Image 1 (spheres, rainbow, N blue to C red):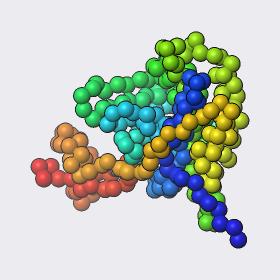
Image 2 (tube, rainbow, N blue to C red):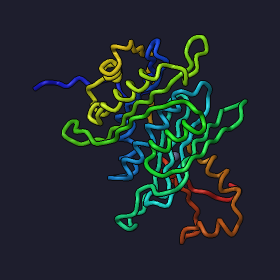
Image 3 (spheres, helix red, strand yellow):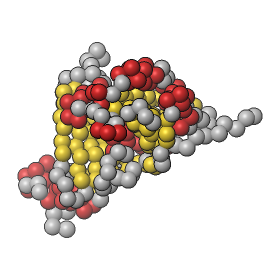
Length: 290
Ligand SMILES: [Zn+2]
């Protein structure tokens, strides 16, 4: 029996294609994706949306140059009413999605709606929010965000799926983000060599979901496979893991703002009030003035 060697996992790996004004990050999520998806008991579409959202916030959040959080939130008219994921520096992620089980079977998954990215610096700077229209997938909305809000030419490839390991299938997610950057001497992305950029896009199109999800294929090796002729340089990986940031105190802060009438609606038959964290399922008992 051959032992498969597992590649470094649950990380974001920044890279640059030297001299070609392109840089990006590759994200691999193994135990982290499984923990979030399985923890919620998500299957099918809900599992895939949660994995995709986790990958997007990991790709974007790992680029933050300051302490803070990055949040993705959608609202739509499709079966998936809401998708939320966030990334807190240096590498904590979580997600929850709300998919209607009883919707019309041919209703679109996300439908028309909005896709918001919010960046909340821990201190100092102002909160920033960019909102774009949601039409297709989360990846398409993320690309639209880059086009409209940041005006950076961007390419994105994401995969979510189940991979057999130790006899049991487990969820994995992965993605590559590639961006045009201003070169030395202040050369603008638009002035950069388009042939290279078009070719990089074509190379990225060749990446299969199996490669993005393969637990034995290191991110570095996948990047080398794609861009070795152009001189790809890989930087220090950033670990990513599931970690909820909820607490009894935060829950109390929210519920303290509720009116007596609103609290009345939350009461259980025995008069107690409980609040459940949507991200991790922890239930917090609450008492006014406690
Ligand atoms: Zn929580």
